[in-house]
Amino acid sequence: MPKSKVRKKAAYTPPADRRTPVKVKPAGPSHPIYIAVMLGVMLIGLAWLVVNYIAGEKIGFMADLGNWNFAIGFSLMIAGLLMTMRWR
Image (cartoon, rainbow, N blue to C red):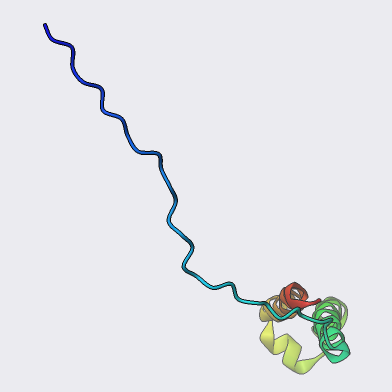
């Protein structure tokens, strides 16, 4: 039986990079107002929950909200926490 021929594959050469590099503008530090708002939103959310626990039944609009006070307080704290991701 005759021996089959072995085919040689050409070495792989990656295609040339056609993209031009883009220079990224370095981001500076966050503005102090951004940091103040971030911390303020987190503290307002914490204060909302504390006031709800201590005197929520005595404050008219908080008593009307009921368990929505937890959603308001935690959403404020989460909004402040999400703001920390953009803090430089």
